[in-house]
Length: 409
Image (cartoon, rainbow, N blue to C red; front, side, top):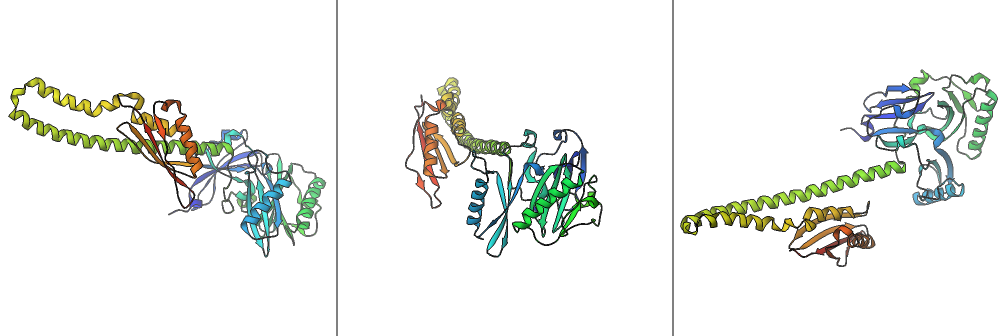
């Protein structure tokens, strides 16, 4: 059985002057399917694909936290990012992902701060997973790796095999400008203790002459053992896929709501089919008994014999003739009032002028909010709803029952 990382998937990434679409398979090497210049939406990726978010859109922030407790590390990192003005004031600052590297009694946190939004073409429905581009490469350890994404130069720093920081700058072949930029990055990261020791400079950009760069002695340009294109193929080894843009999250929620509605409707339909089959069996039994009675009382006449089956059929289907209280219509309106999450319907039935809705909510207030939504639904105005006190479960969830009574005419 394949693991999650072995499943075949498309990956779209910016590379040099082009957008590339790769096919990744855990049982084989990545395969380049398409590379082209122009708008990225022209690359047709399969549904459920991976989008490599360009490095310039994701801010990498290495932080030292004087603790190894996960909760303290998480909250301290969030506060530090907030103090630096990197968290959106709207939305609660949820667009960041933390990677932690314990060092004795301290923790090195690599915070990847994602943008509040990305182009809609990358939001839904094609792309299911998102990751910053430096985490979708298998980079050399203890190195500075340079590559191009469009008009950007990306410099990614690794400590051991871990990506600890990256920065971008505009593409230039000026050796002085590039040297100063790399030197400042190295000074900052080494001063903060994020990197230490000698680093290798791995340059994959043809227009940069590494022999003209003037760098500290601890940074030494090296030549890769294989072709650059072979070494810089996509890899999922460091990917975690912990972030999605808001549009993609809303798309996933809409799909889930439709799936839940479909499941409920199918379950109710199956229940009604079972009831109909039982009634048909009962009706067949009555027909057999009636045929015996007709044999004994044929003097009642042909009109009476024809009337009895019709009367029984109307007895069965009569309650459904009132379209305002048709069970599936009630169910549809009940489901329409469901919030995006927090409420789960476990049972629905209609009998003798009473609609019963049973379910579970994440809390008693959530169940009460759903009750308020039901009672305020214009489509359910002819039904008198009441909700007994919900039953609290050990996990703080609440079981509730909604009873809706209406007059059957």
